[in-house]
Amino acid sequence: MAVLAINGGDKVRTKGWPSWPIWDEREIKAVEDTVRSGRWGRIGENTQTEKFEQVFAEYQDAKYGIAVTSGTAALTIALKAVGVDIGDEVIVPPYTFIASATSILQNNAVPIFVDIELETRNIDPDAIEAAITPRTTAIMPVHFSGRACDMERILEIAKRHDLAIVEDAAHCWGATWNDRKLGAVGDIGGISFQASKHLNCGEGGIILTNDEELAAKAFSFHHIGRLPGRPFYEHHFIGWNFRITEFQSAVLLAQFERLEDQTQRRHENGLYLDEKLDQIDGLRALRRDPFMTRIARHAFCLLYDEETVGVPREKFMAAVSAEGVGCGGGYPHPLYKNPLFTEKRFGRITEMVEYPDYADMYLPNCEKICDIVVWLGQTMLLGTREDMDDIVAAFEKVAENVDELR
Image 1: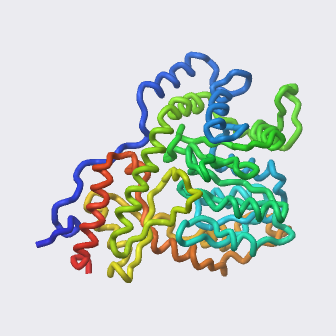
Image 2: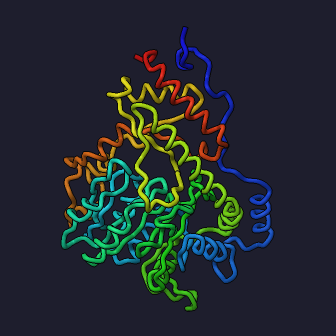
Image 3: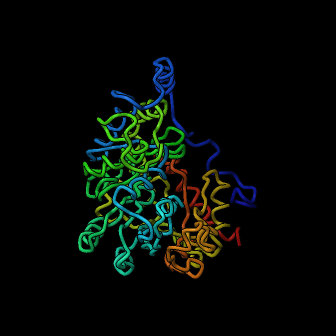
């Protein structure tokens, strides 16, 4: 008789998981008050956007925050603010959302992909050092899933080679490196508020920095080249209109009230799952370096060893999902395997700028991670300790009865 749910046995878990987004009357009132105010855009003083920028920047240990339309916009502007220009090279990992790389291309610059550390999924500082050329202008460490990169080494490399650091901190709401919040540890960084994110308003993002000059540039670039305190129709730079709306900022202010509690809950539940699931043969928790003092856990991830378990990862994940604990494999391939890169679909800029041959690129750790990682969604980590025990029970059940899958 079958034990596993995928073969007809009883499920470990039949109830659902916390839904997303989490909201209540606070969000409704925030939007209603904004509608009634008649002030729907951020232009002017004492706006909801200005209030949110101050509150969130302070929370993230940054002096300045500029709220924008998306995390992609935040990175695009941040790169422009540090001076990335035509033909400049920016070092970036290929295991990340595509915006990390397209923000570089939007500045007519060149993404230089380097390998990751297999045990953390973050950019390998040794690979950064090896990739630096006279054309290198910036490094973009991606704190994937809110797990801090090795910023001590990256800061040292950047200083020695006179390079800017633009942090892709898209997943770093409340995450810390040596107890310091991420996003402005380097020169400048960006965070996302897209609908799946821990702090969300449907779409949105923010630029963070401790540098007054970079903040002024970023503000101008997101505001059609205007400068604070200058005449409205006076424009100083080529800029975009990447302004966030007052509706979004009002929702973010309401969502922000829950952020600290939710972040701590995800962190603690993640540590518990690390400990429990790491004990199952063939599963391994990601390495948590001492400087990762709080992990935001936008996704909970494990490393899967097919040889030890005895069945392909996809079959194992399907069986766990059938037990009521949905999981998946995340990114199917590195960024450089997308047609955008293999065919260099960058426009006429390819006639003026030399790009790597992305089609022939092979970075072993990044290639491997796409085949061995198992992802759980962030909302699961908002559950109770009993919910975490259901996750553990589902993985244990499938591992103990893996013969049913062979």
